[in-house]
Image (cartoon, rainbow, N blue to C red; front, side):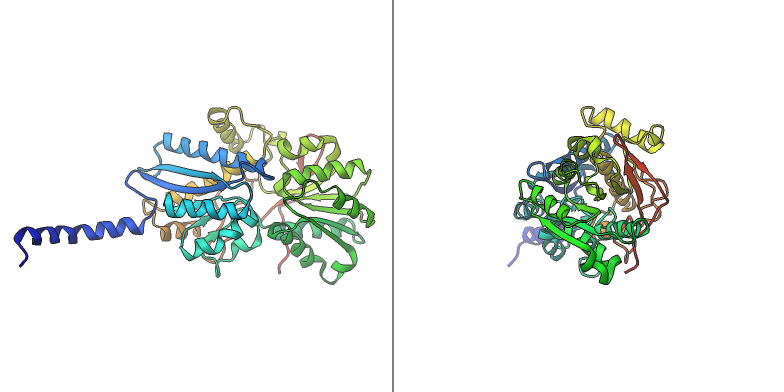
Length: 401
């Protein structure tokens, strides 16, 4: 027979059960903190992007010093994955299963994020604002827990091809791309615009992220007789391409992927004079552009850098990128109004309306919806002068496909 003490204990357990369930329903969130998970290539072939993760660490320190969010401090946990997809899988499982983060934020790399895509969606872990522009991060139907941030690579390639056909309707295109989903999105975007003409006017050559150089690929592309070059490469290989093209005396109209236009990590290492005339696209304000010298948004970013990362390279475009994407996340958390369940976080991530971000080009706004997981869709063309990127033309979008 149960004693009175047993009955009281059972009653207390029953009362405690809902609280336990609530805690289980809100992983990574306590009364005092929110745990956010991230992976970055602090080492390996894409280590130039490590400054993004470094910026986030200091950004969330700033947020915590200002009181946190909804009475909670942010515990930002970031691990090095070396730009290696198997390592990304290992680190993300650690973040989700051991660190029990509430969600993943700004994990970097197309192949790296592809490797964890199924895992995070099966577990219904928000996978927000990825540091990669692969078009598939907007696939809200099949991967409803994953959302990109920057314009898609496919859209970017469409923009270049539309402009190329205006300037050189009889162009022959050399296409250098990384042999993974990142590079192949550019191939798709080129095909979207060129259509049936693709095979007759495009010479595509790929490289592996593990290759030491792309010298032989550039020589092969020059030999094709192409007068236009589109380079879809990460910073290390982008800088190598610029140098090699100049050394060969080849002078194609050169388009360069937006993810590899940092003055500090690409253009200066390549030799600033070698890249004169290169065309790329922008959605972020370039820290080397004198046009932003007195810009309020960039002054906000500069004040952050001065206080929290005083030794940071002010020419490294990864820093204003990181500041902009972290600012977007803070708006999502603010809209949650203290409800940090995973469902609430995803709901608010898909409810951003005409959000202005300090480091985005004026007129480019962040917009999301339950059926729009591509937050940024517009870009502006710009040209390398030898010392900075100079914007020209109006804001444009990609082709309708």
